[in-house]
Image (cartoon, rainbow, N blue to C red; front, side, top):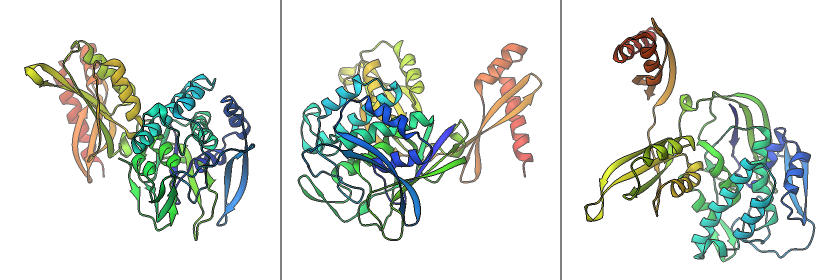
Length: 412
């Protein structure tokens, strides 16, 4: 699985992330051509090689080519300033009609929707009425769309990142001075691990927090992977003692992420449903799993006036919670979805294969704090062998368990 890991030791911003993708081999001319399909005009793009504390990095820049109104926002820090611009509705319309590939288009729309909801909540206005301090700007539209285009064009299948440092001190916002992280960044960081940092100023912008929150499946140490290339994306200013850059590792990891740690911080989505046909619940649960849920299930409950119903629960990676929320509204009769983030302790998971007289069976193991805690033969493998051989299913399962224990106990 082609994997990218962002090491955000100096924070992150949209232009830094796109710059890192370019340094990893993303074709600048091809990216420029795709972004031109947005037809927003008034800018040019550049990609320069710069030195940051002795480290060569790509500096991706959106250069405004005609005069625009300037407007300070929640995010004018060490990575650079932006310009005031369009509303959420205008941005959504631009993206919906642009002929770029569907996957990055939909991911960009989802990202703008999430940030729009955050900004609308902060300022107490309706989503379609808000003019953003951050994402209405031409450069932010390009950064956000360019990032998802870049992942798509590089063929990246999985994104992981380090915990995110936020900086310290104060930042000048549209409505006065605010402590770092600024309100939009702070809201976008809900459920995301952050790192201690001694760097001053705003080193994580709203766009940086948004893009990593929307795309990363995992926040923590670098996952097990074979590194094929390392790239650096530069910010605007210089930091004392360390390069103001994002470091990106591109490589290959195992197709299954279970072996090196599922996300410890997840979103829990819940809905009480008492007016939907029971026949639809298996369809919804299966659809949620296909859409990226970590787990999905329903529990019988008794609602108001004694009405029987179901509590439908979806466990979601943080990056997929908005998409799965939309899935619930589309596929069920619910009028509301409760969302919260939570921590969970997770056993390390791995697979072993055992050979039985009737064929081969995969067996999942769980290890917590170095101790083997569970062994579970894959049910479908056992069922298939039982049907093919005429052996009772429970006999195949027992044989697979016994053989797996023998193999594991014989390991040094």
